Image 1 (cartoon, rainbow, N blue to C red):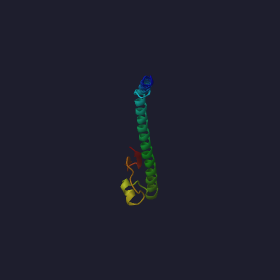
Image 2 (image 1 turned 120 degrees about the horizontal axis):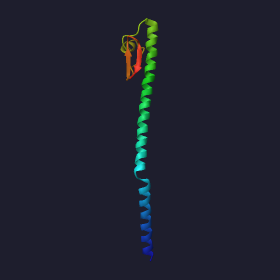
Image 3 (image 1 turned 30 degrees about the horizontal axis):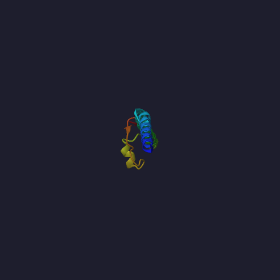
Image 4 (image 1 turned 90 degrees about the horizontal axis):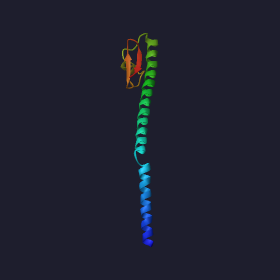
Length: 105
């Protein structure tokens, strides 16, 4: 009788675990995690864009300062580095020496 009770308990527990897994550990869990991954990618892309835009603004300030002092725009951003006005040229920027405009790609 005791053995029958143990078997019944094990079968009941196994069925409960099976039902729980089929209810909570299926596609909705996978969909939720893939949605989180997509949101994470969007946040990373937005942060990267913001960094490029802020870099463009900072470099634009240096270009404008050079124009105020020299009367012309620098021929390149490399020229500003050679004059120690920029420590580095941030990646993802485009510079137009004719207009002095710095833009983020």
